[in-house]
Amino acid sequence: MVDTGFVAPESWTEVDGALERTFELPSFVEALAFVNRVGELAEAENHHPDIAIHYRNVTLRWWTHTAGGITDRDRDLAAKTSELAAG
Amino acid sequence: MVDTGFVAPESWTEVDGALERTFELPSFVEALAFVNRVGELAEAENHHPDIAIHYRNVTLRWWTHTAGGITDRDRDLAAKTSELAAG
Image (tube, each protein chain N blue to C red):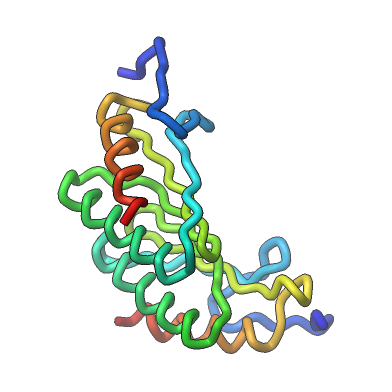
């Protein structure tokens, strides 16, 4: 179920039914390393965000297809990926 | 300069001033491995495509900001990344 009382984790915003945040990394190489850390988490959780890489900027979108929107799991994983951006 | 007689490499299409192609890989892990191979090439060439990952689908967009569109270099690198998708 999609929550009605929506509260996004810090620095994330709701865009088109997904939790979205763009991370600016120091370089393309570090952006790609971040994407790999996110990918490892996503694979372990079997829940995969949409990922867009624009040079050293990485935009993540967490949402749950089967729920048609954002769930607690997305909020949890969004918060976890924020921690991964720190390296 | 942007060419006027545009010919896209096989399987690539021109979308909004960029050479675009979506690759469907066998799994998310293989999609991420492909992105890493593309990233290694991009870093070596100091020319970086926009990359979007949607589970096991990877969309690449090659374009040259300073030229305002697609150049021979983009066509060359597009063709090279097609080869990388094979693994």
